[in-house]
Every structure is written in structure tokens, then in C-alpha cells.
Image 1 (cartoon, rainbow, N blue to C red):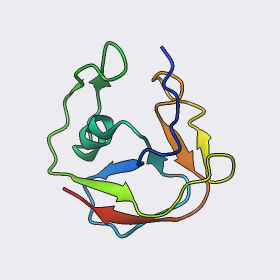
Image 2 (cartoon, helix red, strand yellow; image 1 turned 120 degrees about the vertical axis):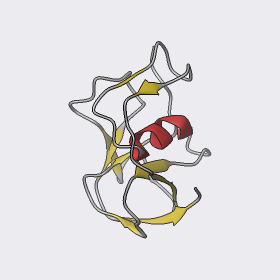
Image 3 (spheres, rainbow, N blue to C red; image 1 turned 90 degrees about the vertical axis):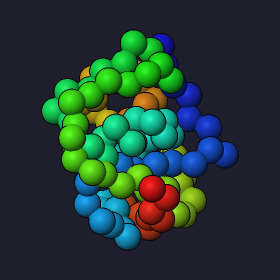
Image 4 (cartoon, rainbow, N blue to C red; image 1 turned 45 degrees about the vertical axis):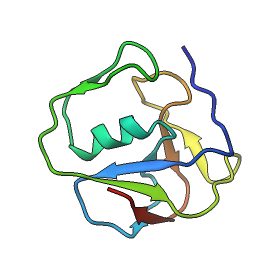
Amino acid sequence: MDFFVDINKPWYHGSPLKLDMLKEGSTITQWKELAEAFAAKPSRLEYREIFSPITHNGIEKGYLYLIDELINVEVDIVQHPRTTMDKGVEFLTKRPLKLKQIV
């Protein structure tokens, strides 16, 4: 199943690190729960279908960030070329982006 990007919805990044800027080449998603799972730094993560519960083995205390600027999907991001997830779930940034910690 493919996930379709909605330009009106927010973008998220999860990390165990305290950040205020996301560097080029980092992963972002519009699936908030996926970003939360990535914040725990798992080595294994799985889900049955998009927006179903996510299971993972991450144990780190992580942070959830909101991308704090507009994303131009044609210019600022690219579909992750080596993702094992459904199309449209995971993207790589093509430039640094401002972050706002929300959790």
C-alpha cells in the first residue's frame, strides 16, 4: 500500500538526540508514530500496513520533532531510495531544515 504525501500535513523527524536543525540527508515522514518509533533508535521496526500499530525494539529515550518550515516536495525531499517501507512513507532531506521539538 502506498502512502500519499499531503502538502498540507506536517512533517516529522524522530531522534534520540537534542536538535534544532536537521541536516541534509536525514529522514522525515508525515507518519507521526513512525517518527516516534525512530526516536527510540530501533534496529528492528515493522508494521502490517500504513497507520497500523508499529512494533520495534528501540529502547532509547527519544525526541519527536516537527519540521518548522515549509517543505517543497519537488525540491526539498526525495523518496528514500533504500527504504524497506511502503512508498511515500520515508523521505530524505535535500537541505538543512529547522526543527521544533514537540515531545
